[in-house]
Amino acid sequence: MSLDLLQEVVEREHRTSIFAKPGIQQFEHSVSSPRHKGFEEQLHAPVKASVDFRAQWPASTSVGIAVDVYHVWWDPALEAEIARAAGRILAFHVCDWLRETRDLVFDRGMMGDGVIDIPRIRGLVEAAGYDGYNEAEIFSKLDWWQRDPDEVVAACIDRHERFV
Image (cartoon, rainbow, N blue to C red; front, top):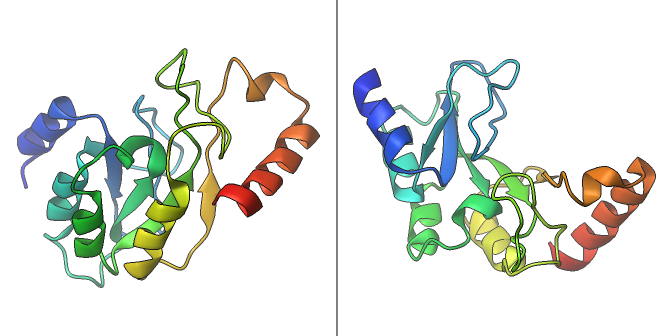
C-alpha cells in the first residue's frame, strides 16, 4: 500500500487506529493523532479498513490492530470485522463515551459512566483470540485529570471489575 493511499485513509476516517512497525509489540489509538514515543506510524481508519490494511502482512509480522472502544463502539459492522481480525488484535482499550461529552478527544468517561457496551465488545475481542490486557485510557482533561491520582486508580480498578 502506498503512502499516498495510507494518507487518504487517514484523511477519510478518524475512528480507529493501527500502527505498523516491525518489532513493536503494543499499539495505541488516539483520535487526535499524537506521536507517541516509540511508534513510527499511526493510521486512523474504520474497523474494516484497519482489518484490510493488516491483512497485507503474514500473521507472523508485528503489525496488528488495537481495538479502542471509544473509536469503534458505534460501528454497525463491528462484530463481523473483529471476527475477521482474529489473531491480529494486539491491544484492547477501554473507557466510555459520555452522553454529554464536552470534548471529543479529552472528555472520555470512566467505564460505566457512558453509553458503550464494553462487556459486549470485550466478548467479541476475546472470541477473536485476544487474551492480553484491557488498557484503560481515560483522557479526561475536565474531570478525571483534575482528581487525586490515587482516587483515579481506585476508581479505574473498581470500574474495570464492574463494567469491563
